[in-house]
Length: 346
Image 1 (cartoon, rainbow, N blue to C red):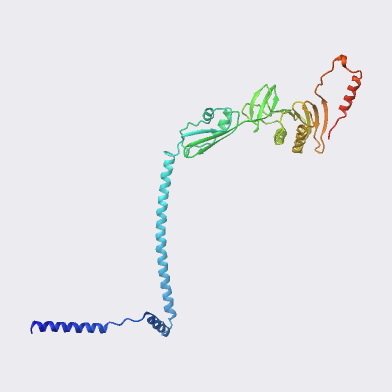
Image 2 (image 1 turned 90 degrees about the vertical axis):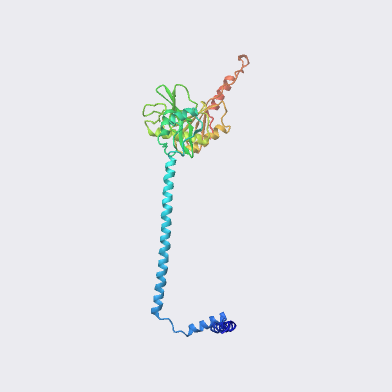
């Protein structure tokens, strides 16, 4: 067989094999048509048996359970990792906090007082190199108040990252009282500010008897607790009413308390009952023009429904020359005295 014949024969065989392969390949079908045929086929199939359906449901449950366990295990691993990292970070931060971080760089003092900032800081015992995390401020205010007697309060705050703030409050005289030939000045918190023989610029209490020995910087307490209550209530009522220039308060008799205003107006309060209403009446009488600035009188406000005013003395009037004194001056003077004695105000 020649070469040309052999090539012709191979070509024919190749064409035949290609035709056979083309006959075996299925022709493409319409997708919608296939779906319709599949749906009709499913309708014609017999229903699924209960046993098979149960097995399929159990298989699905097992698969879902395994999937959940895998996710949970993965989540748990992440939580452990995060916890370990957090614990490590806390440990590192704690170590740095008490060694390198939050060391004191500045101490500031705020508030008014009779002492310099250096004196107050020295009284606290702070050196300025403390670590704020390790510093305990417990007991420091008490120690300062024992040393600096004209302070009523002190607070110490840590201002992170590197500051200590000291806030002080100056003592303000509330009352004074005499005992044993000395004058004791008491602050608003019942602390002895000073002991001297002079007169303090505050209300002086008469009849007060301390229970114990009195020392500067200590707290005062009366033999009769009722006296402490009376002084506190009346002092508070005086401040609340805005009364100034109260010279003294006599608490010798708790049912006949006596205030003296400007060393010239004696005010009988009665008991401490309705003290705020009594102070309101007193303020109206003192500042409302009912009493002259030079007049010496006695007020009785023990009955809050009325106030009784009785003159004691009046400011001295300029005397006339003896030769110009009228003949009936004596009669006029007697008439004035009778009129003053009957004067009362409600």
